[in-house]
Length: 272
Length: 272
Image 1: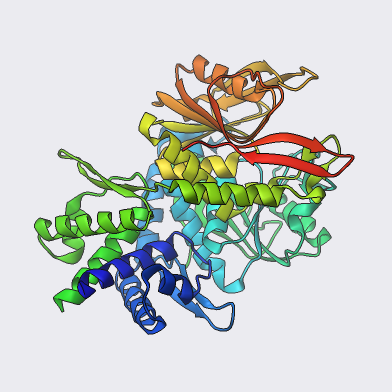
Image 2: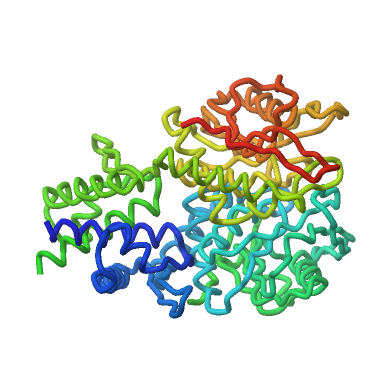
């Protein structure tokens, strides 16, 4: 009987923690759930932690003190990330993706749950140590990946909007210059309530060419007194090499799109 | 040694399946991972299934045949759903949420990973049996919950856009009449590539008053030859009782917002 019980406990602990990434669960929660002493739960947690590590499934951290407990975070292995990004490059390198103007069709993987979860996990793991208090994105295409990143970090999402017709209280609006060659003046807004209590933010977006949109989000965060602790995008273009924001990390780098010969040249760019 | 191994296996199986909801994992994957026979993995799966059930954490289903295996789906218990929705009503019933015009501030829970995950799980569990091939939403505020719903169903997300300046290939645009009293003519567009191969769709949105936006999405799906198998929203208003679409299910029903007395009357509405 004891043997079955420990099986169950390990399974429930691993599942419970991993479906609540970055959420602190007090040991007493498991003590009550299983009707066992804290010492048993501590042993279970050690076993769960060893198993997570052995199979590269993530890691358990301990928070001390009255509000303490344990929390789980995914910790994707270097080889797994490299395999995923190499596979994504192969999927992107298809002539049928090339759109007029040398743009690429990206919505299939940007809106796919398996991809967004994997990309969100990679980005979250790369920034968890700087403890962002929110993930910021610009509508629309980056929202799913940004949401998955926020899920793994267990922080709220802040969505910047293209128009200021937001009906949810006071709105902060800035103008910014698009990073593309046409240098259009654009507008970006957010509902002020969304940023209340946030001190550090991670910017996540789908695509960066010149970096104008990211720079706009940096400015909007500065207006709110929020420190930007990182900027991550799914794809950045190789040119222009000089972006309007510094320190941006990209999962993939787009070297060229050759419309005439229907060739896409894209490579993994994320360093773990 | 054997005892530790089974602990590990159950934990890894429960965690692996639950982080890939609705994704079929062949038993051979676990056989190779653990270096054990299929009969052992089958026993492990039975134990994992019994544990998921006992703790109300979800369920494992089996798919027969060459592409067969097992997959996990969350199956939130009735009491857990009722508790969550009652708590959400208490959080919404705050005078500070009331915005001019009797609207409510909702972005805190619409953009929060714990809430979006819980709501997505509830909605997905309510529609898994009709096997939607995609989740459809209208930008912007419903995207996070729609993405989480799509994650639990393991289907792609289709995002309808407010403008037709979509740079990703052929775009389908319709006009629709807003369900609110002003009856404005609006536009809704989607990139045609997104719907390729989709036969059945579940509509998920954040808010419904008259149902104009949902009706627009129904029309857009009809134009694409896609059957709508359900319409779910986070909050629907009690009035007008007659919506422009039928068969919609809401997590919560907003009975009234009394600006003068700063009172919000909202109740759980989801039947399991």
